[in-house]
Amino acid sequence: MFLNRIVPISAALAASCVLASSANAQAPAVAITSLSQTPTAGNSASRDLSVTATVSAGPSNQYVGFFLSRDDLPGWYQTSGSGPNASGVYNKVFANLSGGQYTLTVFGNNGGANGQNSVTVGVTVPVSSGAPVVSIAEPTFATIPGSGNKNVSVTATALPGPGGPAVQYVGFFLTRTDGTTTIVIDSSGFSGNGSGLYTKTYNLSAGRYKLVVFANDGSGVPTAQSDATRFIDVP
Image (cartoon, rainbow, N blue to C red; front, side):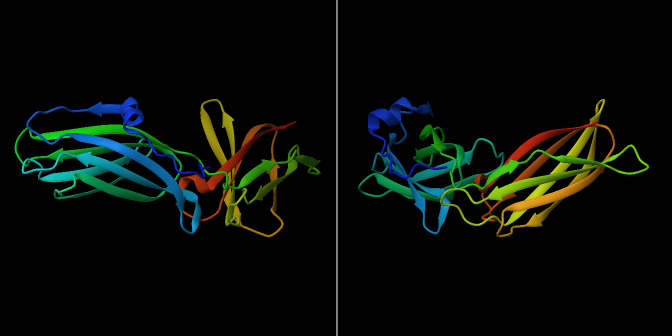
């Protein structure tokens, strides 16, 4: 899911990926000089993002702030800041980030009205290849005597991804759509097992059904889960 190398960004490259910036002559000058990603210790499914910024030193600089938000998770953010230092160089590490698209803003201000400059860049944390691998086999059908329904057996395989931890949970979500109404038939699952095989049998009437099987490794990051989908047509 993630790159396994450090990716420094030069000042020129950082400037090329700037999403927004401000230029107030009364406020400290701000620049992001490098970004790098390294694997999080003890969690191969996440990355630590290291940021280096320069903010002009001197009495006009009263505060330097870092603000990181995630584009696909409204309300998620990390923030920190500090007072000025003599070197004008500021380093920040955002730890244990899951795969996704982030927006990073670094700002410096002089403590007065209209006294702030900032630089904003987009940051992509790649999705980890360690997520579980899920597949759904072709279902089997058996007629239920005395009924027009069928017993439909479905087996899914859920195995750890390359370099990923063991599968902790496998969920089955079966729905049927009649017109504009979606009917939930099943929403349950299993704890992970050593075989990686999970089977369910449903008593279904004729129609089309959608089965989604998902697996996660329990690490708590969005990229630790993956799923597979199969449509089932019951004659």
